[in-house]
Length: 246
Image 1 (cartoon, rainbow, N blue to C red):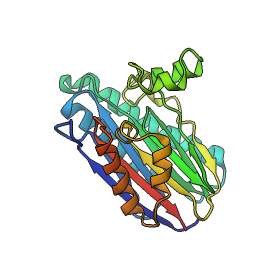
Image 2 (image 1 turned 90 degrees about the vertical axis):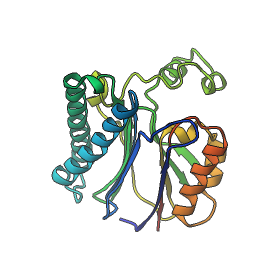
Image 3 (image 1 turned 45 degrees about the horizontal axis):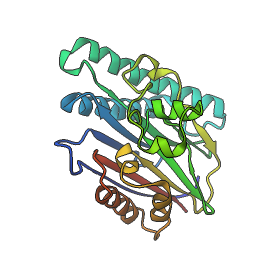
């Protein structure tokens, strides 16, 4: 596995009273997580906190990071995310103040010399490789579903009223139905961005690509991306994790 440099920042932003985003970075650089909670103040915070803590804990216990079988790694990741989903659903049913809680999750996991990126909800993972900037995750939003059905255009999707309405997230019945990971061999120079929709609410993909490619300090890049999203009018919490492979 290539050496990874990591930068990260999460802020409340201009329009929220509290930060419902969470991130988790493995000290050994084996996995990276970003979650964006929803359902009201304490509920959203609780959901994203549970997701990152449970997934982190179960990955460490259940995933063999030397495993070279992609099928086996994906099976374990999906099982771990489904476990977190089950616990979030259970608490939401038991505790009235958490009744509507849910959260997105995205991850990059390094195992067996490969990188796995996937998630549930509309937080995103992007990769910049040799000038090619690509979104590796699929948004589980109604707008994306309408786009896939070719009912609306990409231009309409940007301002569509359903763009923040999710049909899959952790805390929903469908939350444990798989994370559809993209699997790739790591290449020196690859850059990854994990972000909540607070980033994409304030910056378009063209600007994101430019910022992700600007300089070699991942912490500086993460801070610049978050600041640009804030200045760009993002109305949400803003979280960015930047990975640079060496």
